[in-house]
Amino acid sequence: MKPSELISQIENGSLDEKLKRVYVSDKEVELQKPRYIRIIKKFIEMFDDDRDVMIVSAPGRTEICGNHTDHNNGKVLAASINLDAIGVVAKNDDNIIREKSEGHSMNEVDLSDLSPNVQMYGRSTSMVKGVASRLHDYGYAIGGFDACTTSDVMGGSGLSSSAAFEVLLGSIISYLYNDGKIDPVTIAKAAQYSENVFFGKPSGLLDQMASSVGTFVTIDFESTEEPVIKKVDFDFAKSGYSLCIVDTHGNHSDLTDDYAAVRSEMESVAQAMGKTVLREITYEEFFSSVSDLTDKVNDRALLRAFHFFNENKRVEDAVNALENNNFESFKDVITSSGLSSYLYNQNVFTPHNPTEQKLSLALCLSQQLLEGKGAWRVHGGGFAGTIQAFVPNDMLDEYKNVMESVFGKGSCYVLIIRPVGGTRVI
Image (cartoon, rainbow, N blue to C red; front, side, top):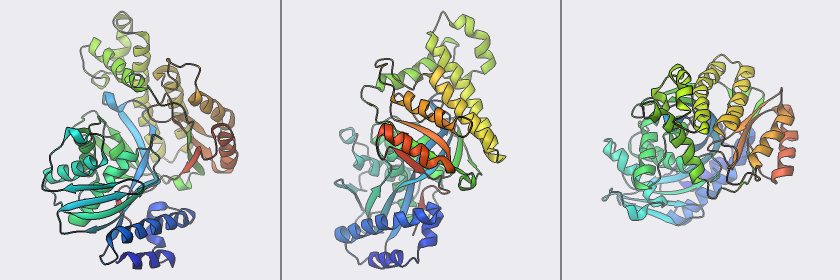
């Protein structure tokens, strides 16, 4: 379908069902239409109106449970959300990928050279090349294309804007050159490889996997080479709750050492017990060794180890609750996860600036409003940034108004758990 024809069909409602498959509600579909039309018009401006195009989408993700467990080969529960990266795309015969992200300069990759370049670390062009390179390594067909993309996954929000972009690229190659047959796990692995090797940023597989697979997904990283991935069947739209992410606008600067300390302290406990990561130790072995460990590691490392072992169990409990349609138990698990992050993992504020506690304040406000009704926890890496809350729909306006009165208009994002990951929309 030509771009101008696509615009006409979006405007007359012919494609509403295709959009609803991704965005769930009629209201969300109507909100998406101007965005889709805007990026299609950009494609016409950049690349003309004479080729058939498709539209591909890849979602951001939210961590539901499993806070700071993946780096020690633990378990996580995540979900894809309605905020996404979308691309209007058409094949070309040039063996060149041209990708123009809204608000950014053109990324251009000649597919005759698929080697990483350390001089390109940190640039989005390297992500494009990295995804194509890895899929080629896996034996899939690759080729040139022209694309205009846009994303409403907020950077720095813990919702994984970079993973959405990488999964979008992998999904485009899947649908353009492989009949949509590259499985989501392979796309996620290619996306992670691109970020690690070509973009120069170490990252686990959680973000890319949640974006690529879609809906609720639980991942067990006991084997980092072959993580166990399972979709969790639960229709969140029927739960009677909304998922809110609150951006507290805390200061993200100089937190690298705080993030690194969580991992290194957990690993210091494992190393004191002759292992590399905590997953190689059972909880019983750890608990029986605590008295010996007090002379070998610091106290906070022990607390963070307790968090790790119990958080793994909470992931299992949260999955079981969803699979048994027991949302009340699920809420209890989520709130317990948040309390453990606060007390034991201690990633709600940085000890280097103890008087700035915006996440603590957001959690406190959430408890005042939601105790006995909803659930709340720190979201993602912590120390600054966002919290997550499950809010009864009849309280949504009240919750949003209170949080935005404190943290600013637009700081409370009401999200949908979307049922699909990286996908061709149209």
